[in-house]
Image (cartoon, rainbow, N blue to C red; front, top):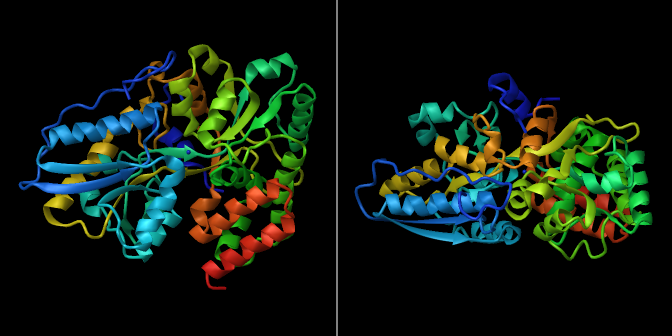
Length: 448
């Protein structure tokens, strides 16, 4: 099994203290990020209009940082009329899919590596940025090994990542654990005993906000299923070559997730609150645990006191009996980057290149890291600029391997079936029936 990008980085970066849709507005215990500096970058000779869509609409440090950099670009480039549209994270992907289907893409837009990139390339909707990367070799070479892999198709690279996203971190509240004299779970049996202990004491064991449906898939199933099946099986099932989602091992993975639901591991109404509300619930001490991605870190740093952050800790999901996967792993992906519409040309393209570099160049990568967001760029971490929890995650990431996220490998249609199927599963649906729906969707997607 390949080691994660972060593990690879450990061999190439100096290890100062190592710990996933800005300088202003920071909360106690979370230092602000470096403000973007003015640059003397050459500007396109003519007036141009450029549209950009993003999902940095929240009040977390990373969202504020990215908005700050976009506003700074506007000031530094008065000849570029920048039309910025922010769309809340849970609604962003559906909105982007809608305009993609109509071939009405914005000029630049936040997009995901893997399947989304592949589908946009297949639809002839985006263009590569190799010319930009090759013109700034020092920047290009500053990314961790493998950073461009899932943005690259047939030798053409379509984006530069602006983040690194582990998706299945198990966050836990140390005060609650100490109160009931329990330890973080190492095995599935440990986890089920914790659920029982917390339930008996009227404590919600695990906060879950699955309203947008992707959370249970990305943050729980992707790692849990890998524990059961192993990564090789999953990749074969994706290709429909030697494995099917109706195989007993995948059904077993669904059964484990359903076991949590039936045991009352999640609060009532978990399908009616979103990811942000889930994070708030955990931060307020209303649940003992939360299974979430690295994207929670900027939110927690912005909205949680220093004392509350110091009371949080992290680990990986527990092992499962007779599992074929690595129990010391996290599902994760290289984070989002900016995609560029195929229709962007001439002076508009020159401006687009400058904006891509402004938002994912070395200065921006450092600011993103200091906003408590992991990046796939070689930047040493100044732990005085981030929360204690982020420092802990950053350190943990050097000890784990990365496994695929389901919606990063499955077709978009199949990922939707998984997401909806897990909502059904947690409401009592039959695992075998849901497995068949997933299998049928992926078989259709690959033409088998």
